[in-house]
Image (cartoon, rainbow, N blue to C red):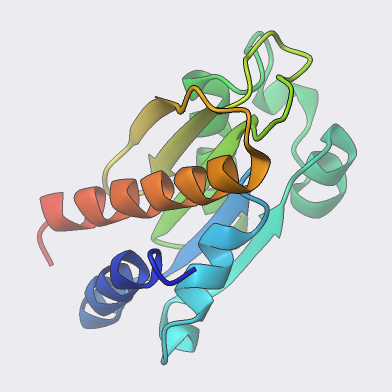
Length: 163
């Protein structure tokens, strides 16, 4: 968690300065993105909520993500993850949403992705999606890597926009 705090602190500073809000929809990172953002004092000024969407049932029950939202998209892809981010952004009415979906390990997922695969997406004033492949089967290491890359992506997007 300690290596996530500088990124979470920077994101929190930018969000607070701009009076912007965020929600998180994560999967294989297991809540680490949310935990890092919430570890920053004053998080209530910008953090609206988040969910760990580990199953399709969770997608449906927690965020009301129906098949039409992700129709024709392969799960754990950039397009799928961006669609989840856009949906969550609208549902929570926040400025930003960071979504993550992947395979932490030690094995891959049912969609054919190897352990260490994660797609991360930002929706908001900037939209961006990236894929991370760690090449590792170590579950805790991958979870941390996914969270770190997600926070890096968030900071990149925040810094690329004007206040």
